[in-house]
Length: 353
Image (cartoon, rainbow, N blue to C red; front, side):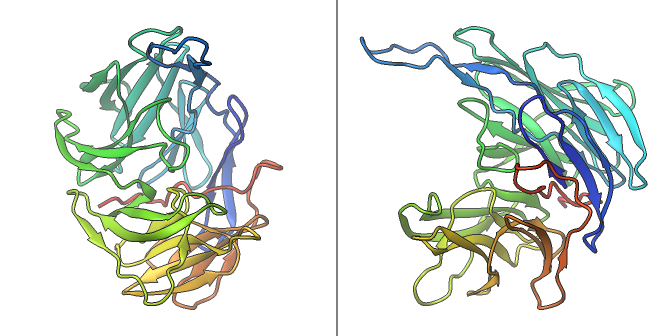
């Protein structure tokens, strides 16, 4: 579980057992605030045209392997925490002060993919300088340069079948409505950077079956809603639709933080609006053309396995058995006051197939 606040502030990374009991934790510092300058464009006379905005600092700051969780401390230091709570220094990335660093460690703890996204310090035709590479976790040997660009940012977020999964970002470097700040994914060969597949579905945490998809529905929970679709996208880019139940459609909130695919791809959990006027929501699970309310209050955060879902409300985080078994309220969670609830970042051991 990860709980973040603002730029340059302490945040919590904590291991939690399958029974919901909070375990070892560490308190690093999140990325510092930076400015993203848009590429120069013509501005109509008398118009107010912004030239810059605060850069997106919500790029992931953790990576999970088979044996530990790695985390970013500040802008360039990477550390790790083992299940027994042992914390170790891993690597310091040599990056300019105005850079966003993102990384992902292979499941076997041998290789680390790193992206250094250096932001321009003034409005300039090239707003970024992106360098992505992979090297050994221990030391910096066997480096392979994978990607470079001055227009489009990419950063590593996971590994699938020995290949690297990277997020794609645009505008101010990514979106705030996706766990990885991503507007799309690429699967690339980790030894050459060759693109193997592209995914445009970016809803929820990535799982072994791929990614969740949604079109239509409700852009925001109190806003206008329209009939939509739900599906999943496999790692080769293939999309498979979810059959929806008969009758009036549920008011699904179309947001990449609250729609999650189960690891085997058979279930999809989503936040739905239960009362637009009151602005109340619930968690609904879709499977085989049927759907039902799983939690009367709160939003899904992701799956621990194919039957256990993490759901959060304003007051608690729970592990819910979607087959009707017992649910557990997470206890002993480290959290930041008045900053919502801790969020599921992934499951150890990591498995994207």
